[in-house]
Image 1 (cartoon, rainbow, N blue to C red):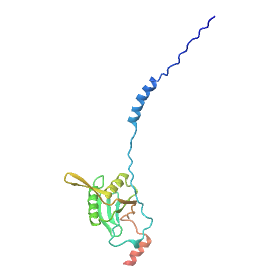
Image 2 (image 1 turned 90 degrees about the horizontal axis):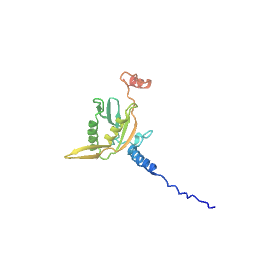
Image 3 (image 1 turned 60 degrees about the vertical axis):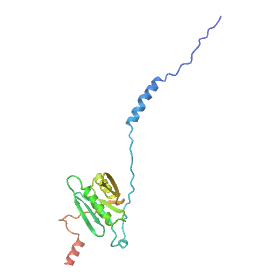
Image 4 (image 1 turned 45 degrees about the horizontal axis):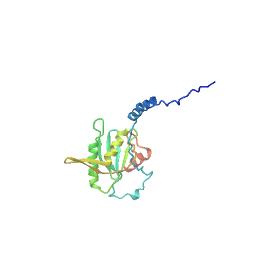
Length: 180
């Protein structure tokens, strides 16, 4: 008796469903991907204690203090240069920029500055002040010119401002009495 063998065909791989999935999935993943650009800025933190002996009389140590109600620009040794009061909900960054240009014109070799902020200063205000102190943009004819002002920025905490009605500490009160 003769036996018949059945021929079995090799099954073909059915990948059309997988290809359809890939065709839909790849554009979806590419369209929802977040492409971000990171900018890194080097900051120099101020020293714990600076030596007063190293400071020269004609040397500028620029400090920009961000307060709730104003921006105070001054020299660490010479004192306040100008106070720019807050106008409306934001600080006056145009006035700060023009003041920084004037200071840079007087001290063209200086590149260092300190930006000091109060504890409740919004991050956006801190970044805008740092950008304003670092460089300025001026219009010359039909083109904009970017000028470098004080690119080496140190950041820190603003000194605490004494309230008008606050009492002096005992040692300060004794010094005031002794002086009169």
